[in-house]
Image (cartoon, rainbow, N blue to C red; front, side):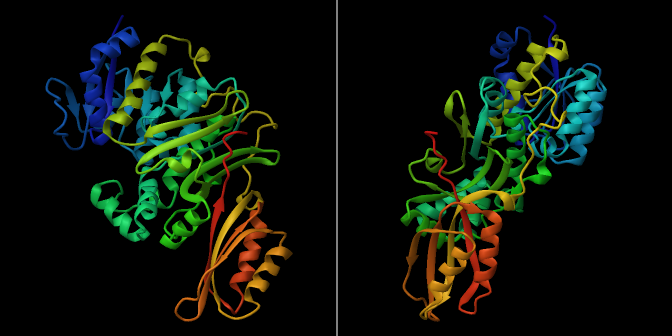
Length: 438
């Protein structure tokens, strides 16, 4: 059959890995696709010494590539929002299929991009946008297609997981481990997207849309980072039988859909609690299959390239299929149509348990007043640890609560922090059982 000709935009870490996997495994990929897949052109800003582009047409203009009539599939690996959006829409307008690893692009502009692709009858594939080399999007969209998805929860940012792992294993402070992660190349010079949960929220938005058949709604995702988690919190969670992980969580409830990213205490025996270092993992609960777990490398040149090339291969297989009969981009047909689609819940309406840490003046009645405030807000205490007084006669108090509504906890924390005998802010970390036997 006629070869599928690919244009790669971006020759950085993932672009270089994609180029090398496509060339190194060309024969194997052709056997799987039923036709050759060849690199027609590469657009790059800087050369990649790991890639031998001898004999390949090159350009520094990604839009030249997107308009090249000899290119069938544009692989967008430049990242970011604005230029990437314009590039993808240009490629679609020129009738080209698109493969991207850009989670920010899909989470923020995906609805627009998918509509444009549908009107043009072309494919947009984005497996590598979530969890690197782990094929979780294909699993959700196709492998679990018979299931009503009840919830999903994932460690979907390797930088945050690396930091929390080393904080627990070595008792180190957040700032210390972050600096090490930056030195090793796991964290960017500006780590905000990773440690404040924005990267994870992009990915969770995509997963939730595929799981529940709703439009992409990144702006409704609750996002909280790990920069306020201390070595003390990690130690106390361990003493209580929990491990702190930075999770993206989405659940189906009678009131709507939860969509949230935040530090979370999970029991030590859960599978997600035992995912360490820079690895990613996503747990998914389906009503028919039960719990499943998808684990592996969430980033890196060739792990991510594995997903990119798998998407190129899928495009090569489906390129002659009428677009009305292809698997929908977000797994469901008619997304956004009708009034019966589940809605994303505001964070203050979500119910969960909580870990609280506060510093109180060492005098009688303070703890009783804290307990009274919690009781008045309908919050019951599951466990309590009161430690020895620190310098300045401040007593660290650790509380675990039963499940309660977020807005009740917000009001309780506001009242506790207003007490004259409480020093500083109350640390709050949510607790999830993630019962894998549901």
